[in-house]
Amino acid sequence: MKKELNLAVSPVEAGEPERLKNVVASTLKLDKDRIFQIVVVRHSIDARNSRIRINLSVEVYIDEKPEKAGRPHFNYPFVGNKKPVVVVGAGPAGLFTALHLIELGFKPIILERGKPVSERKKDIAAIHGEHLIHPDSNYGYGEGGAGTFSDGKLYTRSKKRGDVRKILEVLNFHGAQDEILVEAHPHIGTNVLPKVIGSIRETIERSGGEYYFNSRVTDLILENQQIKGVVLQNGDKVEGIAVVLATGHSARDIYYLLEKNNILLEAKSFAVGVRLEHPQELIDKIQYHGANRGKYLPPAAYTMVEQVMDRGVYSFCMCPGGMVVPAATSPGELVVNGMSPSHRGGKFANSGIVTEIRPEDLPKEFQHFGIFAGLEFQQSVEKNCFRSAGESQLAPAQRMADFTVGKKSSSLPETSYRPGITPVSVGDWLPEFVTLRLREGLLKMGRKSHGYLTNEAILLGAETRTSSPLRIPRSEETLEQLQIKGLFPCGEGAGYAGGIVSSAVDGERVAEMIGQLFKA
Image (cartoon, rainbow, N blue to C red):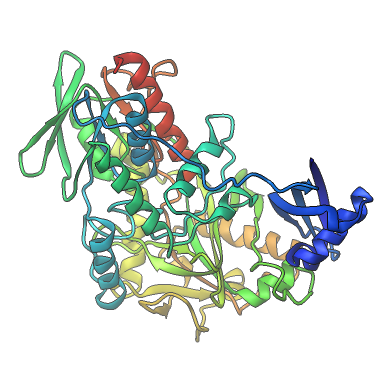
């Protein structure tokens, strides 16, 4: 017999199987020896007050053993001789488009401007050690996209747009931890995700799909308002029945390529700011109300949101036990991001602290760039940041409390940012209207969370790649670009997603529509 229960238990009861069995037996009023197994199907932490509780949804097997479940399984047929679909970009949007195309009987041809994940690691190491940015292989470009070396957080609010559970199961099928199917805020980790990405490539290639690395798209093949394929930087042409643009939020050249071909773009809101790093122990004390975290609670996370001057100031991509990394995609720019390994065992916690920028907020000197005003503003912040730190990947940094009172930091604490930091005030590289919003937002956050506003924490720049300032408009009915038949903008770079899971969901939606429009 199987019974389903929802429980609120202590961290110790959740962490020790025998104690959890006692709780279940007491709740069901039965002898605990009758319980063969307890399977946790959902796990979340409630730390809203000092009595921290773990919310569990469990399946209890009484007087019988459960059937062996194992990992989710997916069958991907061979499609090497089927109709080809060109997928530009091997991030989560492109990969999940490709996987679902295979399920639907199409052959995906994946074009990735960067390198395979194993080779990409060498270029990332060069950023840390030599401050060298490879323009097509870095934290933003390469197999797996920006998420591969930037944490692997899988939480999304976009659950109405598609089958989020399937996305998690596909990742689990390809090697991600079983816990991602249980946790309320699942996380793979930057040490595990590259292996998952490699496994996905094996599935696609085994099914007859094709991969081409170091293959940057430089033009589109258009005939009578219909796309036939793309042109690569070496002059090769790659054709298919449809083209999926899953190029990510940092591929600025793709937006200029679309504009050159008179393809409609839309300006949209985006965000810029800083990456804020605290000692993890301090965040634990704040979030767990001064209690010792111990072995039963994970490194604490937080979410902050404030309104300042009619704009949001908020935390973004919070990484417990993580590190700050250099995420620029071109020489002469300085961008930072955060990531965590699967164990989240680092000494520091970091989060983006950013403010919303709407098209009408942009300074007058950027208005002459027209539709690209936001893109140019974003890039100008990154270049200013680079210059302020001495034209290297050293990050400009300022102590948090110093920033809120307008004081330059004369010294800086230890940091996880491996290229190194140098004392520079945020206002030296970030425009005043952004600085003012961030300052007021952090003051409000500090008033609500005692201990959060401290000089033990530092602000590093620049956090600018939360999303793209542009969207590629598409039909709500067919998901095709409004002017070009067969061209499918997809994921973050197209403006329809914001993270690994929502990008993957969008990829599946695009593949589904291709299946309906073109028939395998």
